[in-house]
Image (tube, rainbow, N blue to C red; front, side, top):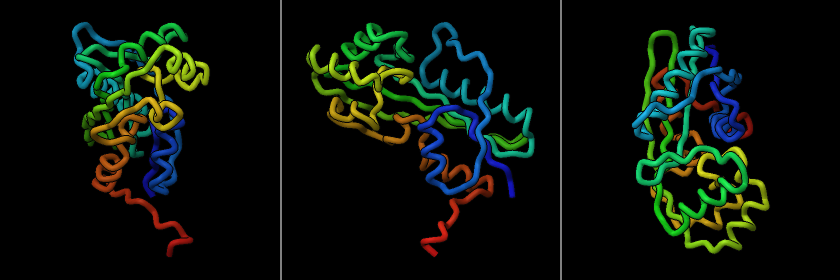
Length: 195
């Protein structure tokens, strides 16, 4: 059977890939993730997913590699992971009451064959007062999250609506990944209990 590797240390990406019931291992690529001047969010995530996949593909040329990168952007301004609580507060103040975009670039590669794509989801935050933002920040859920929030967690109460894939916002557009993995010959496994 073909080896499947997730090129990410993200627990959320691991959880989503687990839904396919395919055995996989994790290899965290060591790559430069800095943004180039004037690089659009969708171009950044696509480039970084390709770089991550290539880095792991060089080590494991016979494996199928899944690599992804996600950013939050409002009016083409990229919001990365907050440096500290104050930075997270400013990000949430910027996002509150507005619609922003979440882009995930994904590359699935094996040897010289690779398929890359970008998924976009629009997320609209409710209007938030400072006390609600401070409450959310006190949960520490914002740490290590692009845009300073985790849609799948407590931050769900801050979201008015989404348009597009929720799994994309979390970091791995699982439907698109499933379809592309099938093109590489990997299909979700039937769980024994369901047979």
